[in-house]
Length: 217
Image 1 (cartoon, helix red, strand yellow):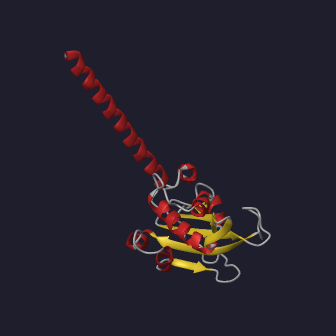
Image 2: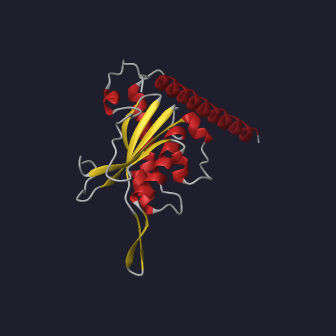
Image 3: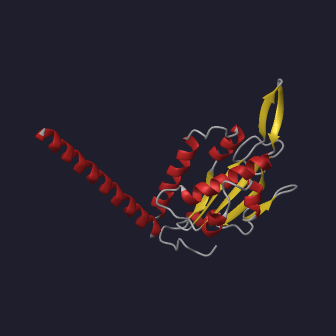
């Protein structure tokens, strides 16, 4: 009996130590990233993106939405801002041996953009972005790659601050309604330039680690 109590106490102390150690480690990385350590920031973002790519999508998620979210690529980031891009295709299903379109690339892109913005704002460990930008591309005719310039066109780009996102009706409003309340531009015909008025441009993410991470957008 006494040995059982002693073992229970020791296990409790060990678990308490592990929890305390994890808490101190988390606070350490929170502080390091907040102070502008770009390597730590990049690692935190990469880990989050890899986790989202590998995660099994929630039941009922259209395959096109999953593919769009798994295509996420970091464009640029600092400890206050983050910008990513996605590649969206049409939502296709097969019925009566015929391919049917349940949604256009823009429909898929809207849903994916809203989901990704939510993830960036609330699900990246050790980082609290003030604002994020999501660019959604679709393959143009004759395009087959995911990186080739000229093979894709930007379908939409959206920016949202943390304060504005807090007011968004994530579970009640449709994606197009949520995006309408954000800073969103959509290509009705042709394409748009997501770098026009961008939150953060790619060159900013390549600054030296000693530069000001919170520069003007």
